[in-house]
Length: 407
Image (cartoon, rainbow, N blue to C red; front, top):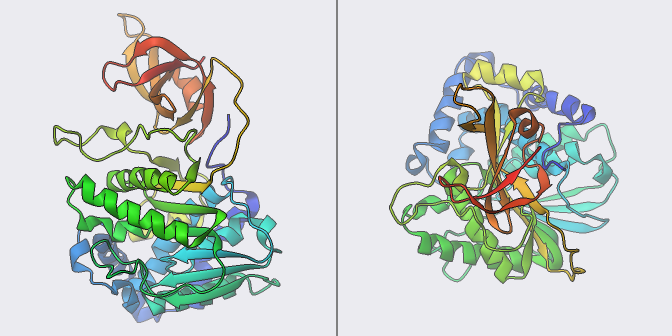
């Protein structure tokens, strides 16, 4: 059994705990403006969730909103990526290039530096693209402050530009050219949720065409043996887009490396079924992480902003080049990626004694309902990869999932 999201290392936790203070030191704000900070964070929260159409193309360039982002959203986004990067199979070597599309305040580079100490002595080139110059400048200053007491061999090149939404491309998927050799890793973190709201929830065909265009773009920017990483908030719309992008990347001969345990059809496509109703909670691929191991400073920050953070959710896909694999040995066990929380599904006795519990998982056969005792199921970390035997001929009546039993 392995987890996608191991707890933060002691070193990473200590460094992450210092990010809020580093932000304050690097971007001090006068005391007279500090009282307005909770209101600025609340306004930014509305722009990022409910009022997307009102925020404008360069909303992050406004000093008050950028300050709010750096002080609240950036530390938590770094936390999410640090949990992910600690185990993600990203292979980087000296002189490799990384494309960071929609880089914001260099969240990806900062998170890699914190979570992957094995890369700190490796010369790497980061090409960080974003449409807002002020955000890129802030990221460069913060990264320089983070690495000030070390010899950092990483080169960070900022590029002002953006990904064009589908239908507005005018022949170009990017507004600028990223010069240099193809990247070993092309990443887009919290970018596409800025774009896919142009499509109606019922327009899966249009969203699919957009996913195809982005798969071609990402693949064209990445060397043939390289990898593509897309990370989005763990909401249903993101899960639907990630599933469509996964299919499009497979067409580009970029097979899923994580979190998928297979390259078959995605059993968690999200979106709306034919009835027009939204799918149940298990029907889109996302992972909800407990933030218990997050530094206390981040929790104090959230309490002060009146936005407590008990869980951090994300949807993501890491895809890489197709490789020739030896045929797998025949086995009666199936690899299942756990994707949901634990929930009760039935009573074992009429008297309401011990209950059977379940967690949904993803496998090549499709959606799987893993059953067992609550204790046995909760022993698995979020995103755990289990190997269990499927119960032949057994299907969950509610979800249509295959059934496996964990003892």
